[in-house]
Amino acid sequence: MKDLIERLRNAGVHTLLAQFTDMHGVAKGKLVPLSHLDPLLTDGVGFAGPSIAGTGLPRVGPRSEYFARGYASTVTALPWMPGVARVVCDGFVNGQPFDACPRQVLKRAMARLAERGWHLRTGIEPEFFLLRRQGERWVSADAQDRLDKPSYDIKSLARQTDFLHALHDALVQGGLDVLQIDHEDAHGQYEVNFGFDEALASADHLMLFKLAAQALAEARGMVFSMMPKPFYDQPGSGMHIHVSLWSGWNPKRPDNAQCLFVPHRSDGSIDLERRLSPIGEHFVAGVLSHSAALTALVAPTVNSYKRLRLGRSRSGTSWAPTYAAHGTNNRTAALRTLHGRFEWRVPDASANPYLATAALIAAGIDGVDRKLALPPDCSDDLFDLPRQQVLERGIQPLPCSLGEALDALAADGLVCSALGETLTSEFLRLKRAEVAEYEQHVSDWEMQRYATAF
Image 1 (cartoon, rainbow, N blue to C red):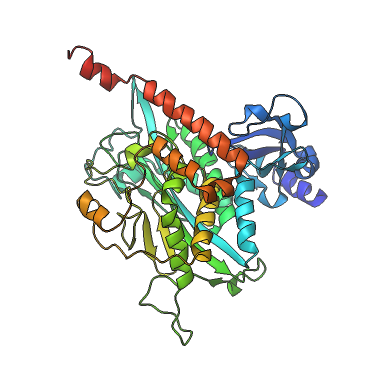
Image 2: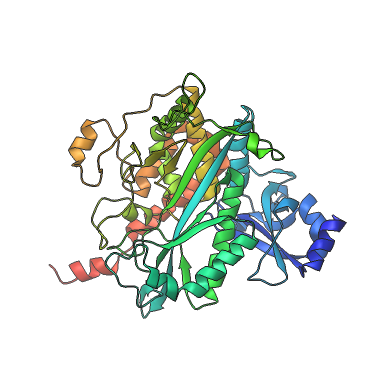
């Protein structure tokens, strides 16, 4: 501990940001002087439990206090906050791991894998918007970003070089492997790709990315937004997750790990003709079988379902799946299968990475345990295929609204069990309240259409 404190002091760190993640996937925390690193890592720092979304904790008694307990391995200096280092924390209540802490939920799911000698690796690809206010409207922060097909626009990248370079540098200093940054398919929309990592680390990285991007955009007079669908006529923001299952992993000898999704021939050589091993096929089948319930967690807002909807956009497509299907390199399906891995394309930018990954693990294990058969590969463009033809193939549509997705989640005992009773109850309660509030809201569109129509 003394060595760590000394290293941090030598690096100019004088304050720690004890950071945890609430049910909504929002980073929360408080500042702690470096001299109090020891109690932060042993007992944790206290918060009023009922003030944290999704805890369901009482206002009085020993369970009213939420303690965020940090881990020394996660201490990372924050370039945009000179002198401050972030410490990733888990939630504890009454001296025990808190069952509704999203990071604890993921750790429970990972423990189930570890019992089998497995671990999950993920590569998360967040998309986001850079916005500004123009009167009562939200618009792209880049007024010159107006192309009908803006994907991969280099001119827009050049105009945002200051922000994008600062973001890249901050993430690299935080230990992330930034693979690429590009302009996406909507005005003011960008994507960052990270190298894959162990699932818990990937989720921690995603939260660091959000902290960095929010602060760096604000410092430049912009708003960083992970709203799934800010503009009706343009694609929304996904948060695609690349997934692979591994065995034999040792932190000291990571090269010894073997990907369980890579298919092999009978002689032990890698089969390049197939995409997934039998375990991989069962895992994917499990995810597909629980897709309706999973959608509530990875598309967790009423706005999410304006992204998960068929229809043309200004750029020509939405890039968001609407069916629980899989296909070899098929970006119109919920799962895009690749050699030794798959890409989960349903999650949007508002998803909590810890809950999304935990539920994915539970669904995948269920597929493996039940040896579920993988449905036929879909090679068609599902955005163009008539709905009736899709249904005749036995392909199920994803939920069309948050209310429908919540009903599917409530009916899926396996996914609810993975989340735990407390978090499931709070998630359903808060999200159903969100649906009710949305349904009661009278929008400008309604006023313009109906106020004088009759």
